[in-house]
Length: 185
Image 1: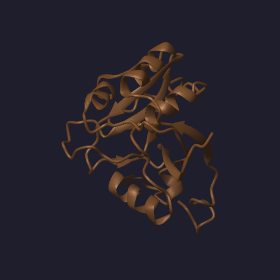
Image 2: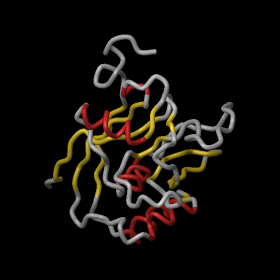
Image 3: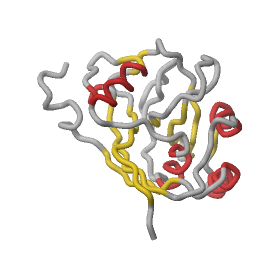
Image 4: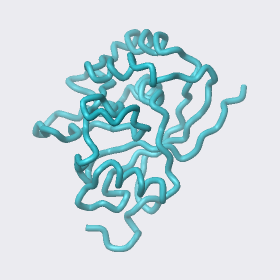
């Protein structure tokens, strides 16, 4: 259990990344994912196919931060609405949905997540990283966003389904945006 604010964001270890996003259509993103042998599950494909998932014509840089649900001050886990609210209070932003495929394309050295870890049903898989992004629809059967995973050496961009009552584990890894900026050449 956290005692004091010494282990809660921003006073905790995080993984920061700068990611170039935009400038590619959905079809171009799919072709790039295929070029690098990155697989998608059915939920990821459903996200891509939805008209509400759009991509930016303009390239821009996102400064992201990877941290755990526990790093946000939830030692017993929390629902996504609580996680999103706390992140906002701490100055973090939700990511655009298109960050998922762009981050997957540049983060190709993700460690194997399943080796030596038991299968977790109805939970984020061990070693996975969930992109905290705007939810496209309240339909509980539609994917809520993307997560990154490496399984037996294969990189995946996967969609996930969870309702607003789902409790995320304190050890689940999430990515938020710290700041946005337009890329200038």
